[in-house]
Image (cartoon, rainbow, N blue to C red; front, side):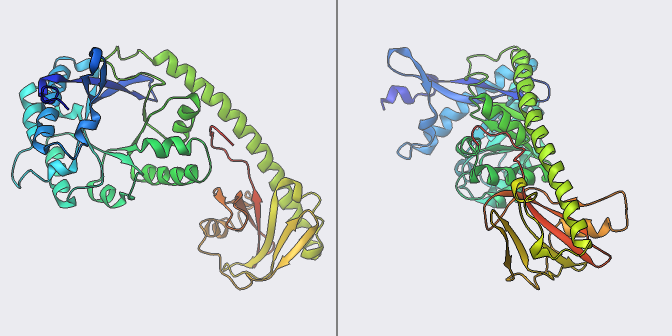
Length: 399
């Protein structure tokens, strides 16, 4: 790389919009490094900061040059919302204890409201105690904290707990793989349940298709960014530039979602009716292994079994297949009271307005099919539990 190209003045910022999904407006921008290549084409300069052959001091100097330009611009344009900047943990470790962050000094010199700055902590390197110290300093001055590339490499859960960020930015590759369905989707949706419980805002980046936009909503994303909306721009755009487009995309999402949910609701209604009929047949004296399965198997009902009101399994599993019922007695004596739906079932006992309870959707360990467990009391002491395949209510690009 020519020495001239490593001069700070040869680098400049571009800004990629972050769309706030509830309003459809541009809430802020991520500051990205750009430079000129041959024939004066504008190209990303991101690779410079990950190049191990370049001195860290050089990379820090260029980064601060870009940051100062961004801070000065946003200080003069309040309508642009917030500006999000990346900070490497490796660089943070170079700051001694008690040293005021240069970023804070630049924000102050620019006259920029600190609450309009988001610090994205990248990578998985860096001393956690140093990160905590600096994050505390940032928070004291009103800045917000984001964890970038969440889900990449190591779990990063230790950092999430220690730093308690305001924002989680999903790893782009994980998000794109998950939008195609399968195990990646299961894992990511599980992670999103954690972020929702903890109250973090979520950013999906790299959104390029309508399918990815729809999946981002299913993930509970507050913000999205990507080429579906805009590449990084030289200057921030009007706040409502994409509002009509977001309204159109959201309308498409609801069209697809309501159709999917309608099919799922109808299917679940048929399952519940079949489960209530099964209960009636057992109460009328039918032997479990002789139950007619013609109405159960086509609905995706996989098995049923009986427990006592303490969760101890009394009967074998009655596995339902195309050829009838197969008896599996390996689980007799197992206790299922630890499953979340079981205490709910007990709490609903003797409340006649409730017929049965259903678990959340999970993937069956034996068949790998998405299913729910439906539970209801056979009598005062026995519980009927039914595992049934259900329609996935999440919109995915495939499957």
